[in-house]
Image: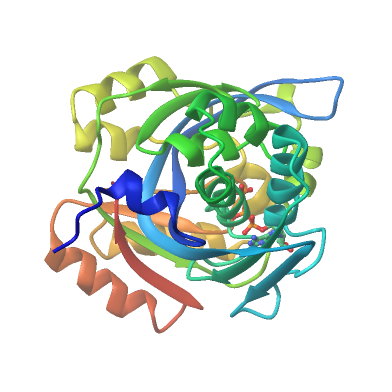
Length: 295
Ligand code: ATP
């Protein structure tokens, strides 16, 4: 019999496993360019159940990062390094950390892989070092690491403004059938934003109506009216994104969109049979095809 409750047990633990979930953008608009190089966004962010597993262990000094995927950097350019560094600064503790990343989220794919790893490390170190920081405090630290980090801390479904840090929680939009298709080439988020001509955007999402659709759990309106203004930049360079979007619809998706700055395309389905049929078709053409769901 275990005599300690979860909180009490955690007090004696020197290792934590945290699930780091990815995200898709159900709609994305860019509304301004800021002097600091960032852009002001208006985007509906949705957590998905595709996840990396982050193990955080105590270590006396310094950081050791391990990952099962060779293209992930293991030095200070890994976002988990920044997360550790900022938590040391915030806590005033000069402690080390051993971080093991088991990666399932494709890298540089528009699914916030790095950001969600950083969010998991902020949460993990908060527990490991018994700091008792609130989610708001962790989100404040998070935004200095990356625009998607605050959302990755709270998860669920949210309307994000500012650079992504002003979050308004929306009604849950969970358990929707999602197919992800990743054509393999990494896309630099910075490059896509640099190339975007804000004044020349052709198709903008109707954000009020899309938010309403999420609030009403109206899968069809949402799926048929989703827009991401970054598509026109990324598709210009990678035509296969347009082809994947068309294939998703051809093989049964009720809507399809590029996530973030790409290149991952997601399709929304209203039944599992079409989802699986589409997966089988796309697998013959696309590098990675992954079944997931909204959470
Ligand atoms: P976003 O959707 O937030 O723009 P993304 O999914 O497009 O993110 P990431 O997977 O975060 O992109 O990778 C972007 C770059 O960040 C990669 O090229 C990689 O070198 C670097 N990187 C730093 N830390 C990580 C990490 N923990 N996991 C994956 N990539 C990381």
